[in-house]
Image (cartoon, rainbow, N blue to C red; front, side, top):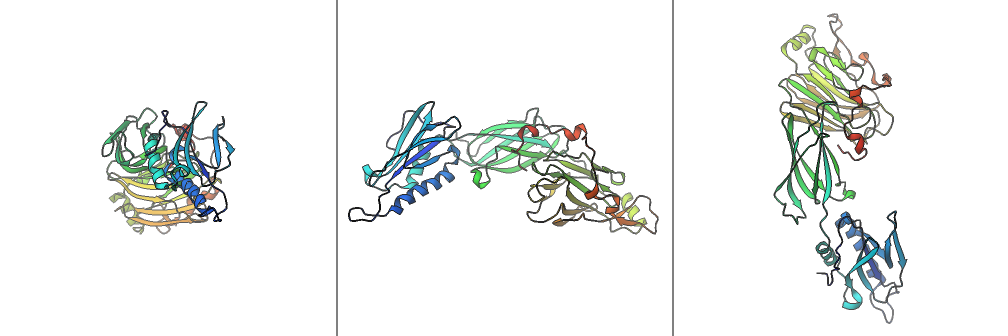
Length: 427
């Protein structure tokens, strides 16, 4: 344990400083044993431990400098010191108002022992308060412009965490406000999140709160909720990050190509809800499974093999790239999410050729590739000449040459609270 604890303990969000006074005299000599490298090793180990174990405390490690406070722009004011021979002194300091407070963690001069980084880590964990982070979960409808999941219940089950409030194995609950936001205060750790709402399918996911450098710090987490689907219907949902600003979802049915310039296919009651152009999405296409009447039409014209809906994405805006978009496609039925695809991390081009869904048995044919040219599929055009029944979906419009109106509809402009949290949303 620490030999001394200041009466004024550091509290969140205090920024901490570890001051390390270490001997820089050349070694070994006739009068000095050991090596200079041993002192530098202690300094570097402390820096690494602060990055991994004390990331929540914004800890700064200073070598042979005295901490004198923070400027208004949060820059550390320091003053060089002349280290003592044989010193390896470690002091924890912080500022409260205009006063500097310090705790001596280890003194090699007094103890004549090298500091143990593991022991210092343990001492600091005992001294420092557990941080509780304000985490905001945004419950969002996958149907753009649809009802906001107000009143949705978020249940967090604590799997592993620093636990002064004895939360381990227990659950935390919160309810979404009118904007769909649920705010909780939790320590770093591992959790299981369950979201329930009468109008939406129950969603369960893992949530881990940890160091930013490991990609585990998400103070704002977007959770997409799928409205309950009636039997015989399928939803295709596209979501992505802040950039590119405009991705477009394409669904080629056996009868039509549904996208921003042609949002409906009456043959399968297929409808694109909206064209989102400010990042994130969602864009959703809802369609019916193929009934006997629709299949009979295919049989009539010798096109019984055209039972699939082909799914791909086009990058319409020129900012960023598809691999960096964090785009996700989901297929949802009355049974929930039956397929999920993530955009490939490599590839050149503006098209993500993702997969096909068989509208008779819901089998998925995965392609998952980025290409420079628009994918093309056979379609049966409405009331065709029986001798010329099939044509390329490209003949129904090519994404690369489609222009869009300058003005979006009010529904397409609706971004709920997303605009207020630009840059914080992950998918």
